Length: 208
Image (tube, rainbow, N blue to C red; front, side):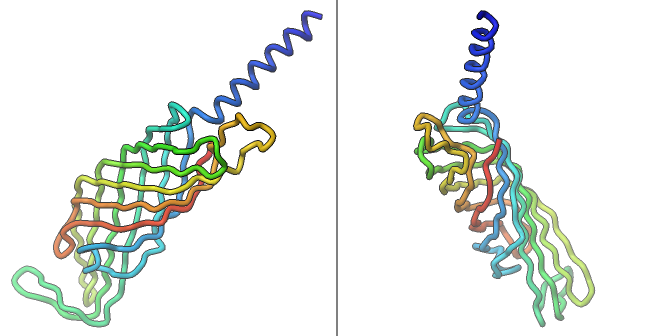
């Protein structure tokens, strides 16, 4: 009798641990982030960009908040039939191609308002550093400036749980689809792009 009882206790303890691990613990986030340029970055491109994404890692200390890190990348580009740009000791005119890319590494904090619900609103903040490349190709002459600066990124959205057990009301669902909005401001700038700011739509997953 003792062996079945012992096995049963071990199984119960393991199930309890797994149940808790699904609420608290380590998670990955992977998002696709199309963006709308704001401010002086529109001097390089005023088009909505489909080139953007992020990879993050966060640790949920409780069901309601987490700390982590995130890496983000966004790119804005546009072709111009004819434009004039100042260069050293003069200016150059011709067809041109502009591209600005921004990469950011952030420390991030998130708060979750309804972790027990299938739809869980959240908000967050990220601060860190970004690196910006301001590229220009005009009349086959390339120009590029690199800069870096402080970055500030508030965000908000919802998590839509896909691992919630409807038969267990006590289970906290955190493995979710993610839909949100992120604003990025970076002090990194060069030439006519004095700083970089844009608004992104975040579409992705939060998984173990």
